[in-house]
Image (cartoon, rainbow, N blue to C red; front, side):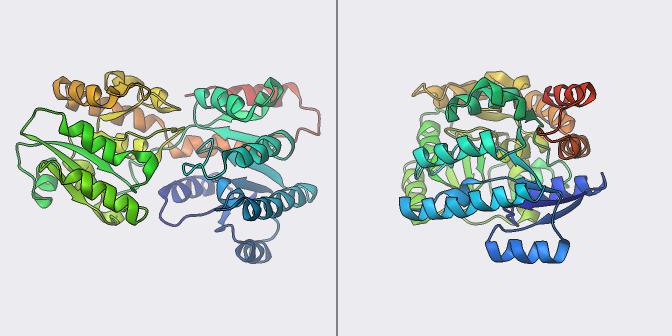
Length: 372
């Protein structure tokens, strides 16, 4: 079975982990950036795929102005239907309901709604809650729910080096050895609310607490907003640059607790990353996060509460962070890429909707729809 996955982002370990696991299930996986020239080259070299597996499709639909978005989306939709006419199965994994930048949510909703209804054979979501969120956000009828299949996001336990102790990591970063390190790690974009995190941290009355912000700002505005907020509290340490894969463990192992104060979040590789390093996590009760972090609910907060993040940070001070971290790690281990690849392969191989499904196929779909 040949599968083409796109768009492909080299720095995202999700592609590598899923692709490698699928290969172990006799699935030949090719990746493309999604640019037309690259797709054509990939198809010419590898042949027409049996399955086109799409991921962040907002990249194909939305640009900075409405006219360009409409043209871009028209090309993408035409390509999807051409592939469908050629007998290619179309699968979409939903990582976000809408793009985080929200440049044109009305247009994005229009195209995604119709693609789900008329173009995609299967739609993979990472948790049961995402099904309800997707149907509501796109205004889809309940009949479409038969296309929605739950396959969890895999862990990153073996994706990064992890041979550095907490003490060694703290020393490498020049942090006090008795400090409680509260860490944010990842690319810095407006929806991740890093300045709001710094403000909430500044309300903590704890001289031993340190907030470590590590990641590459998306643009100059994001950098300036973080720098300005950090200047107001000398307990805040910033490393505003891209962190190479080999250095990820330094920040993850230095952290006593990781804080990911995202807004409008559905699923998150950053949460799986922190869980894979055995970190407790402060995060909002949104999207798939309550299901992922079910074993440490005391650190979750209501994003609609203006002081929710601040209160969650206070609760983290009195929590047994080592115990919560171990629970997260043990839960992360259950999100095994090999099992995920097996379930994904069965989706690829399922009979198309145009052909009557047998009882066996219906049972398989019911099995795939059950969350771990």
